[in-house]
Image (cartoon, rainbow, N blue to C red):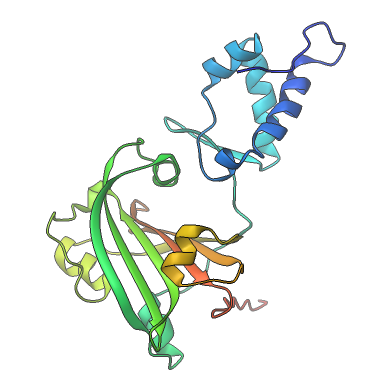
Length: 243
């Protein structure tokens, strides 16, 4: 790792490191969820103490550019909008309430090793074995949204689970896992090959990402869901009322 840090410059080392880090986190691999190298590795690469490096990275944390989770690491903060809604429900219930009949176009269940981004978002170690549920819903055979749900090991999903029926009914009735809180983050993503294929998009239109952390009454994570919506088919509205 080559770092353009001048130990003889009148500019403090932590300021030089901060400037370097601001450029570093713009790299595609970090924007796509790769964890930043650890403190020891970075401090050694810069030839400084951990405290000097930590002073620089702390500034990025305060500016909201990166986030840290104890025991996991540091990652670029991709949040754009964060809001807590007073009431939430499953997607099927949301659409039914609006008189929209959504079709389940495909569904598959697999067991995967958590990559850096999923592990960071769930607060587990990279490589943790997780149950992943992939669902594509749409209208008249046309995909509208892709759901990728990852379930925390504490839920105890059975190896042969097929998730037949509404998701949160399955969690409650089969696993005694009662969803109580939904923390959501909303952002826009550029179209990539994976999403283009899943959502059958050929035009270069942005995709709306709705990331949901579903917690139980003890505020323990049950599900991490990445929902990717076609922006040409879906608009997400949030209504607030002044007290």
